[in-house]
Image (cartoon, rainbow, N blue to C red; front, side, top):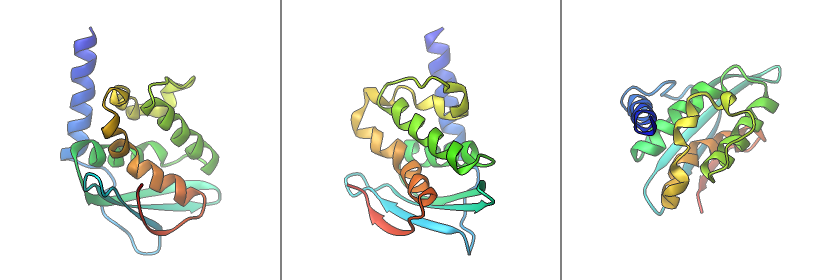
Length: 148
Protein backbone atom coordinates (compact mmCIF):
# COMPACT_ATOMS: atom_id res chain seq x y z
CA UNK A 1 0.00 0.00 0.00
CA UNK A 2 2.71 2.49 0.97
CA UNK A 3 4.43 1.86 -2.33
CA UNK A 4 1.20 2.69 -4.21
CA UNK A 5 0.83 5.94 -2.26
CA UNK A 6 4.45 6.81 -3.01
CA UNK A 7 3.86 6.14 -6.69
CA UNK A 8 0.73 8.29 -6.65
CA UNK A 9 2.62 11.14 -4.96
CA UNK A 10 5.42 10.90 -7.53
CA UNK A 11 2.81 10.95 -10.29
CA UNK A 12 1.27 14.17 -8.93
CA UNK A 13 4.69 15.81 -8.57
CA UNK A 14 5.72 14.86 -12.11
CA UNK A 15 2.35 15.96 -13.52
CA UNK A 16 2.74 19.42 -11.98
CA UNK A 17 6.32 19.66 -13.23
CA UNK A 18 5.45 18.70 -16.80
CA UNK A 19 2.15 20.61 -16.95
CA UNK A 20 2.40 23.44 -14.41
CA UNK A 21 -0.80 25.18 -13.42
CA UNK A 22 -1.04 28.99 -13.32
CA UNK A 23 2.41 29.46 -14.85
CA UNK A 24 3.20 32.84 -16.36
CA UNK A 25 3.20 36.30 -14.88
CA UNK A 26 0.56 39.02 -15.19
CA UNK A 27 1.27 42.74 -15.01
CA UNK A 28 -0.23 44.54 -12.04
CA UNK A 29 -0.11 41.69 -9.51
CA UNK A 30 1.89 41.82 -6.27
CA UNK A 31 5.18 40.15 -7.18
CA UNK A 32 8.07 38.60 -5.26
CA UNK A 33 11.15 36.98 -6.76
CA UNK A 34 13.15 34.51 -4.63
CA UNK A 35 16.38 32.66 -5.40
CA UNK A 36 17.99 29.80 -3.58
CA UNK A 37 21.72 30.35 -4.13
CA UNK A 38 22.66 26.92 -2.78
CA UNK A 39 20.89 25.00 -5.54
CA UNK A 40 19.91 27.47 -8.26
CA UNK A 41 16.13 27.41 -7.78
CA UNK A 42 14.74 30.74 -8.97
CA UNK A 43 11.04 31.54 -8.70
CA UNK A 44 8.78 34.55 -9.10
CA UNK A 45 5.36 34.37 -7.46
CA UNK A 46 2.44 36.73 -7.93
CA UNK A 47 -0.70 37.04 -5.85
CA UNK A 48 -3.85 38.95 -6.71
CA UNK A 49 -6.04 39.71 -3.70
CA UNK A 50 -9.51 41.24 -3.88
CA UNK A 51 -11.80 41.83 -0.92
CA UNK A 52 -9.61 39.72 1.36
CA UNK A 53 -9.62 36.74 -0.98
CA UNK A 54 -6.83 35.24 -3.08
CA UNK A 55 -8.34 35.39 -6.57
CA UNK A 56 -5.23 34.39 -8.50
CA UNK A 57 -1.73 33.05 -7.91
CA UNK A 58 0.85 32.97 -10.68
CA UNK A 59 4.40 31.67 -10.80
CA UNK A 60 7.35 31.45 -13.14
CA UNK A 61 10.93 30.38 -12.78
CA UNK A 62 13.44 27.61 -13.07
CA UNK A 63 14.60 24.94 -10.72
CA UNK A 64 14.41 21.32 -9.77
CA UNK A 65 11.34 19.11 -10.04
CA UNK A 66 10.44 19.68 -6.38
CA UNK A 67 10.65 23.48 -6.61
CA UNK A 68 8.71 23.82 -9.86
CA UNK A 69 6.03 21.27 -9.04
CA UNK A 70 5.54 22.74 -5.58
CA UNK A 71 4.97 26.21 -7.07
CA UNK A 72 2.28 24.77 -9.33
CA UNK A 73 0.58 22.89 -6.49
CA UNK A 74 0.76 25.96 -4.25
CA UNK A 75 -0.93 28.11 -6.88
CA UNK A 76 -3.87 25.71 -7.10
CA UNK A 77 -4.22 25.25 -3.35
CA UNK A 78 -4.29 28.97 -2.47
CA UNK A 79 -6.65 30.30 -5.15
CA UNK A 80 -10.11 30.97 -3.74
CA UNK A 81 -9.01 31.08 -0.11
CA UNK A 82 -9.25 34.08 2.16
CA UNK A 83 -5.91 35.68 3.04
CA UNK A 84 -6.23 34.20 6.54
CA UNK A 85 -6.97 30.70 5.22
CA UNK A 86 -4.12 30.93 2.71
CA UNK A 87 -1.70 31.99 5.47
CA UNK A 88 -2.82 29.09 7.66
CA UNK A 89 -2.41 26.64 4.77
CA UNK A 90 1.12 27.95 4.16
CA UNK A 91 1.91 27.41 7.86
CA UNK A 92 0.48 23.88 7.62
CA UNK A 93 2.68 23.22 4.58
CA UNK A 94 5.78 24.30 6.54
CA UNK A 95 4.79 21.87 9.30
CA UNK A 96 4.31 19.10 6.73
CA UNK A 97 7.78 19.75 5.33
CA UNK A 98 9.19 19.40 8.88
CA UNK A 99 7.53 15.98 9.14
CA UNK A 100 4.49 17.04 11.19
CA UNK A 101 1.08 16.14 9.81
CA UNK A 102 -1.27 19.11 10.30
CA UNK A 103 -4.60 18.57 12.06
CA UNK A 104 -6.55 19.51 8.95
CA UNK A 105 -4.35 17.85 6.34
CA UNK A 106 -7.18 17.76 3.78
CA UNK A 107 -6.98 21.50 3.25
CA UNK A 108 -3.44 21.00 1.90
CA UNK A 109 -5.06 19.23 -1.06
CA UNK A 110 -2.33 17.99 -3.45
CA UNK A 111 0.40 19.60 -1.33
CA UNK A 112 0.21 16.50 0.88
CA UNK A 113 2.40 14.77 -1.74
CA UNK A 114 5.44 16.51 -0.21
CA UNK A 115 4.92 14.68 3.09
CA UNK A 116 8.22 12.78 2.83
CA UNK A 117 10.44 15.76 2.01
CA UNK A 118 11.55 15.88 5.66
CA UNK A 119 13.58 12.74 4.92
CA UNK A 120 15.65 14.87 2.51
CA UNK A 121 16.46 18.07 4.44
CA UNK A 122 18.31 19.82 1.58
CA UNK A 123 15.11 19.56 -0.49
CA UNK A 124 12.99 21.42 2.08
CA UNK A 125 14.10 24.78 0.65
CA UNK A 126 13.18 23.57 -2.83
CA UNK A 127 9.68 22.59 -1.71
CA UNK A 128 9.03 25.77 0.27
CA UNK A 129 10.56 28.48 -1.95
CA UNK A 130 7.35 29.43 -3.79
CA UNK A 131 5.31 29.04 -0.60
CA UNK A 132 7.62 31.47 1.22
CA UNK A 133 7.18 33.97 -1.60
CA UNK A 134 3.39 33.63 -1.45
CA UNK A 135 3.41 33.99 2.34
CA UNK A 136 5.49 37.15 2.12
CA UNK A 137 3.14 38.56 -0.53
CA UNK A 138 0.14 37.89 1.70
CA UNK A 139 1.91 40.00 4.34
CA UNK A 140 2.40 42.82 1.84
CA UNK A 141 6.05 42.25 0.91
CA UNK A 142 7.12 42.61 -2.71
CA UNK A 143 10.33 42.80 -4.73
CA UNK A 144 13.33 40.51 -4.98
CA UNK A 145 15.08 38.53 -2.28
CA UNK A 146 17.78 35.91 -2.07
CA UNK A 147 16.83 32.98 0.11
CA UNK A 148 19.11 32.17 3.01
